[in-house]
Structure formats: C-alpha cells, structure tokens
Amino acid sequence: MTTELPATGTTALASQAAQVLRRLALDEELKWRVPDDQVLGPLARKVARRFVAGESLTDALERAQRILADGHRVNVEYMGESCRDPQRATTETAVFLDAARLLPHGCSISLDLSHIGLAVDEELALANASRIAAATAETGREMVISAEGSDRTDAVLAVHRTLCERFDHVGITVQARLHRTSEDLRELLARPGRIRLVKGAFLEPQTIAYAREDPALAAAYVDYAEQLADSGHPCSFATHDWDLIHRIDHHLGGKGHETAPWEFETLLGLGPDRLDVMAGHGHPTREYVVFGTEWWLYVCNRLAEDPQRLLQALVDAAST
Image 1 (cartoon, rainbow, N blue to C red):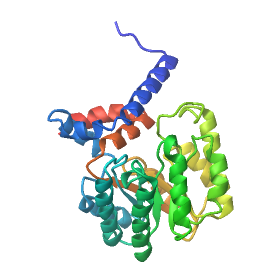
Image 2 (image 1 turned 180 degrees about the horizontal axis):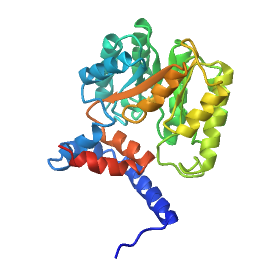
Image 3 (image 1 turned 90 degrees about the vertical axis):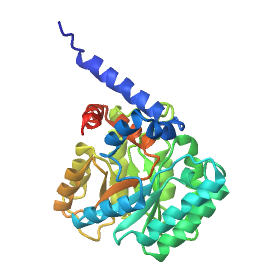
Image 4 (image 1 turned 120 degrees about the horizontal axis):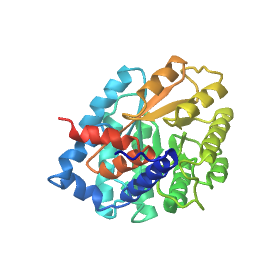
C-alpha cells in the first residue's frame, strides 16, 4: 500500500527541505569537506555541473564564449564567499584581475565582497574591490557586487557607496526578500552603476525577510522591478520565475531594444529558455556564470530555491 502526502503536506515538506539546504549553505566547513570527500565529492560534482561552469577561469571563458555566440551577455563570478584569511583574500583578488583582463567583450564581473576581505575587515574589502574596479574600468566592463546575508548588507552597501565616489561602473545586487530593500533602493537609485534585482536565497528570519513562498515576495519584486524600469537606471531583472518575467515584460510594453538600460538575467543552467524568449522580444539578456573550487554552498542555495531541483540532482548524481 502506497501512502501519498496531501498537497499541503507536500508543500510543507518541500519548505522544510529548502530550509535544510539553506542551513547547509551557511556551513562554511562543507565548502571544503564535500568536494574533497572521496565518496560525496564525485557525486556532488555531477550535481554541480548543471550550475557551475567549472573550477578554473579557463572553464568560465569557454562557457562565456558559447553564451556570447548565442546572443546573450555574460556575468562571470569567481566563487569563494566568507574568506577569513586576509592574505588569501588578497591573493584571490588576483583571479578577478585576470578575469578583467581575459574575459571577452560583453562580460561583466561579479563578486562577493566577503571573498576579498569583508569577512575580515571592511577596509581590506574596499582596498581589494578598488583594485578590481580599476581593472574593470580599464577594460571597459561592468563590475557588480553580489548580495550576501542580511548581517552583511550594511557593510556591503557602505563599500559600494565609497566605490561609487570614484567609479561609475560598479553595480550592486539587492534582494526583494529583505524588508529594508524599499528604503535601500531609494538611495541606490541616486548612485551610478547597475542595480541587479534578485529574490534572495539566504536563510533569513521573517522579521527581516519575506518567506520564499510568500505571495508578498512576488508583489515586492514586481514593484521594485517597475520602479527600476521607470527610473531609466541601468538594471538587471535576475529571476527564473516565468510569471515575474512576463509581468515585467508586459510593463515594458512587450518589447526592448539593444540600448535599453535594463536586462533580463538568469543563472547558468536554470533559464536559457527565458533568455531566448526575452531576446526574441528585443530585450538585452545576460546569463550568470560561476566558476571556482568553492562551489558546494552555491549549489545548496540553487537547490534550496526550488526543492523540485532535488529530484534533478538525484538524476544528475546517478548519471555516468
């Protein structure tokens, strides 16, 4: 006899699974242990292949070139959040400098400030971010600061504010989930640099953020997206949610142009069909490509965003 969970039970179970994955994504030890484990490592790498270009800059370059050939722009990020060694944070900065030099035209660079020093000291992060900003300015490409947990948001925004005093090409990522975003957005619209709007994947209490399944989150995302679109400020609508994409497209009149200040963006492996449709409507489109050896926490967050992806992960892990 087979017992099926009612729909409400299935939804609750999926929500619990997502919470577990988000907690795993906060365990900094796992980003080393899982890839190095003789049993889990090979299985986890099969799962990661769907979301990660590879472990080297060469892997990212090859993937970026294929995406550009398909008519989309590219955003490249070297993964390594929560680096707590100041010397390593500075050494890792050199990889971003190489990326700024080697990536083809049409590629921007994204980074977690905690990868280059924020988890150690705000001044260290600012110094290393300034080096990357100078390198990206020299090569004529955008630099976009990624979102991190709400406990780091003030520090992230402070570093971005200081960078904007010297540079006009440094963007920032904001999370529609955070209740504070409405206030933050007003200040960010007065700064230069692209504003990248995401839902937000981090484990946060509901006093600080909407639950991922809360309908209010979709409403907030659309409201912020419309504000950005109407402002004429450079922005990216980073989502795989078809309903949100269609609603934003409708607000934009169902058509775009090559010089539009907005972009539709999806993560590698999650939304090429979305990009193709929006490109067909004339909108600029971009795919977000990540690479590096510290991929496990990133994969946990991708699985947590949609627990249905766990089923695909099982299939991927069993593949040859």
